[in-house]
Image 1 (cartoon, helix red, strand yellow):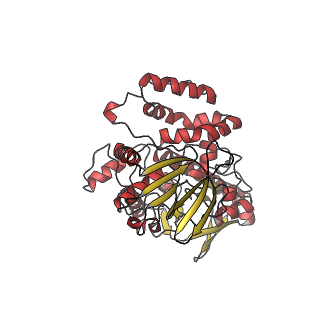
Image 2: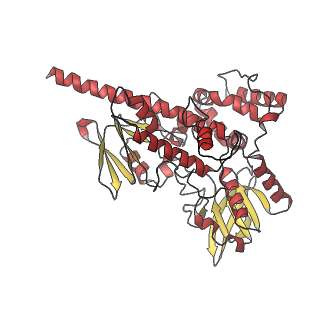
Image 3: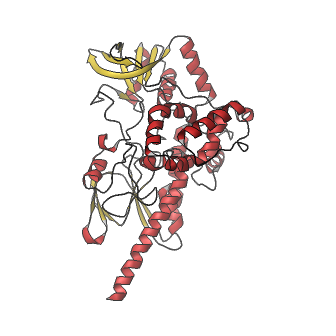
Length: 446
């Protein structure tokens, strides 16, 4: 999205060469939209997922143009959104005129400033270095490499890897760490592939995502208003009051969304820490909802005893023969642990947000060279002036996506990302224009 917006912005006034570097074989889908199974669906209606802020229905129009039989409020497979993004890139490549967009498949290992030139050299694995004027970090969610007392996750299978589903119909008990959207994805695909055993879903609060209400049954959000800005305590009181009045939290959250980033910026550090410790899990299950039919399936699995929700944290994990064993400290307990034995452990506990703990060589390099700074809340990078320019030892590094959580909190959904793509494109364009003017001034001086 950032590359597309840059091409649009620079088409007429500032010719630009963009190198979009992606370590996967296809550019566009990333991890979120590359799944081959139809079980993994978008949790947002098709008519709201367009890549352009001014045309949110663009994705739905693309579906219709490609003869997919969908309605505006359908939840379609995520792989289709990956195809949509890939095609947008191809279209822009074909019509970029004076600008160029090069797709390069490689992994960036390091970014090194080139002295007084104010340029950067990107060191790539198995590819020649790239010298650039500016860098946008659009790395998405960082892979989790540790969890609580566990310094390694070698025993756990990643939810979006085919290995998690190998011979799954022969197993009797699976422990899933996490109970959010990724855990729901796993259960849906496991059911599709014939698993008939038991699921134990372990998370700190033991909460599942709530279902989307049908569009026809929702109260109108236009009448919902909040006193903004306000303290965290006051906001919580307002949300509870309005939710009781309208009979649902869903329209309340939708009415809040346009103001979430402004609210987050206005909260004190103490309020942000309080939210993260006590309210984050509750917010997630209300904010990140699932289709109604998925919710019905989960309820049925719970009713029949095949799915159990556990509240607690893992103390230890070990492998014995073909079985795995974890010790869990239930929520509210200090010493008494519960022992779980299963044939498979699946990691659905989200991604790493603390930059100092992630295993990415690029992030480690950027921190070591002080090109970026980790935020004090452990949510991403510190930013300078705007939410898209990295705070660090050099200008010219920009950021979009989950690494912006420290500043914006809500910045992982398409609705927020497409807006941030416009912001980062404008910031990069302004930066490059200023640099060109500086160069011209120096030439005129000499």
